[in-house]
Length: 245
Image (cartoon, rainbow, N blue to C red; front, side, top):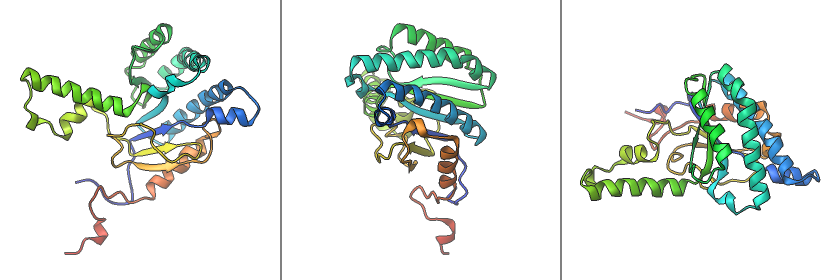
């Protein structure tokens, strides 16, 4: 049985990092300056997640809808990711932080993909925090791909339709076991999931921060986690104190 008490442990935090472009435009800067400032916020959030004892942090870095943005902005985004991978790899290793990605890889620029794979391999044994970057990711696409994979198995005769349950479907989404996010944070005041971890977030607690991502500080993550700990998670059940015999 899941713990329905208000003292919630927290393993997995997901963050929709929103507001980089608006942050820059409000300061009369080009949008890419907001993405550059947002990269520094990634480091702050990662360090605070370690201090808070979070074991997994998933950051929505680039959605499959983001390809619709101007080509120059997309190029800059991947240039910044390339720089982050090169500059942070050594520190990730030293701090015991494992980095991995979810989402498509076939459209990521070759030089970025090469450094990404190198960083994933170099940090694979990190146990302090698992930092996951959602790149070229969309939850609907993820669900469709999982459904197709299961359908192929049914057609091949390896799987009976009645054998498809939530556990088997979740395994088709992500082959390696990953806990569902306990808490999902979105910055910049928007209050929607925007195609992020739709299956996995069925019972996630949601927290909306008005600050744009570049202004998101360590204290903001600590505040979000404190708010999470103050909530009662029921998962469709009743709090123990409310159950009468």
